[in-house]
Length: 267
Image (tube, rainbow, N blue to C red):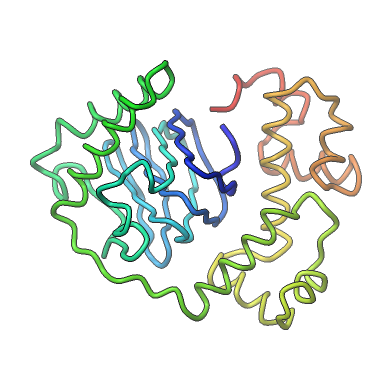
């Protein structure tokens, strides 16, 4: 699974994810998540909720969203370019749901049985040789979710646009030496203003955010490549192996070597 913060034209990915935790991010794609088992705390823009079995969250393009798993969670995630949902293409860019969350049995009662099946089929065909069939199931899911959902017109002015600029720049440069002063200079903002944006909009500090992106990148390299750990932490942007090991242990509760041995490839 590629990083969440990547932007790709014609992107379409559907995968099963276990115990996902990822900081606030955004991208040009739509992101939809279905909870198979467990619970997951999801935030989309200013909306937050703990999702439970068969609940759904839907993040339209360029809306800030994050995940946090406190205990255990198994989820199906689909990240796709709006072009794969042609009927909703303009709507996905111009509007957003009044609420991005859909509770099983209450928000979508007519489709309570259909939605889990549709997600399972979408995942099945996406991992096989029929992405077109997977996209067809995706469009069925969108029809079920959006047909009865109140929508509001997007307002991308003010802080939302600023956050987009900040996250977009960081997603391209987090593996490089990057400080708050440098970011402020590149984006022509006051560094104290940027710090306030992180605290109020992303619920973390600038350095916590950078650190999480670097750790996520390193974790994927550990599982998906045979690169040496030394090469991985250097490529991820950490200043030393000691710093990398300390932060990795705090985040994943195991050393990088243990992580590479005990976990299956990331998906």
